[in-house]
Length: 68
Image (tube, rainbow, N blue to C red; front, side):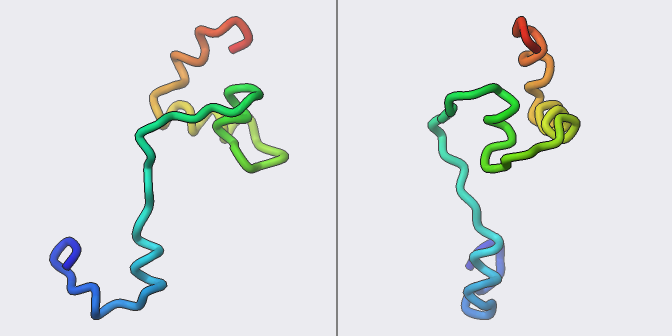
């Protein structure tokens, strides 16, 4: 049972699509903060990166860096 639902009644694919992992260890890659936020995207939209930073309550903190 997960959240009151018998998981034997759902497909494995459906179950896997509902599960995620959030590691407790933070890993930053070399590059800019924007590149870390947009990890895996070669070309990213700066406005989308800013929106993600705001959603994570990190935008104000990031804006304090010399290069913003």
